[in-house]
Length: 423
Ligand code: GDP
Image (cartoon, rainbow, N blue to C red):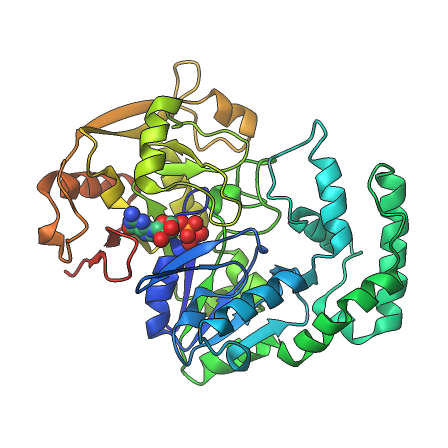
């Protein structure tokens, strides 16, 4: 593996947390490359479900170094909370955690203005954590970074300028009582806490790779929520696809050896935006209940649909997938018929390629193929031959259609519930 990227091949929530947790056993360092604390990776360890938001899932693996890259946006309060929670569970986090000094900060004013913006006509169904506004400041070159916390005066001056601008832009946002100085003073205990964790993530990873160590780069969300390649504007504000991985940790693209995509055996999406294979609500309710499809961070019910092969082929192309891991196969165990979108049609004709515009994707109608369900439990399967024949046929079809080998199939939430394919 020297440097492997794990990327969501759908709209996020594919079960990447479990896969990264399993792969981190083989890695020396695990780094998160984009996103903020909206991403909730759920990892099951024994009886316990641990939800990680900012810290790489590798933290649960003893002895692994975990890094938060420059591509991530950090809410100090949330990071602190997460570290405390993990330490209360006996995980030694701080000696193994490094945070890039170039990672941008989510500041309280980002959340205040996001709440106002999401009331208006331009709402896109964000998680309300200020993430998009922190990335907006980053692109506008008005953001404040972890490294800026070391210089109070410069921080205060820039925060004041940002507040002044936001007050003009969002007069209805309650920003009157705040100031840069007040903000910094309120953050001071967290600043003291975080500065010892600051690391040159790029240098650390580069040196580790040079020394023959193995690195795992972990994303959040999924390809169809990528800022550039997702269903814009219903996307996240960062580069969730594999190309964002080296960028978000400070490595060159040639440092990456392998890209592993993760996709559910069906599809879900949260928030607004086109979702061609979405099911009618009665059917979705059944799948949502079987797959426990509620947001790990917000508890929001996820929209549910069948597997979308045009979208998965697109994800294979955008990420250059070497392998695909299919998760949650067991969720389909009870269904008597399983549907898959094999293509799209717009006004009766196939689009020439995956539509770049959300409006065009909205007009796409899936061309369906139905598979008979296997209607037996797959959770106990540990070898390919343990899977029911109908499930194997379904997986073989998917693999042929997207031209990417399926190397692992996850058949339950627990760590051991997976089938690794050999040969
Ligand atoms: P992530 O953000 O991509 O890590 O995905 P989430 O953690 O939000 O969602 C994955 C959810 O599915 C978690 O609750 C996992 O414990 C659970 N999960 C992962 N793989 C499987 C699987 O194969 N079967 C079942 N039933 N649950 C799974």
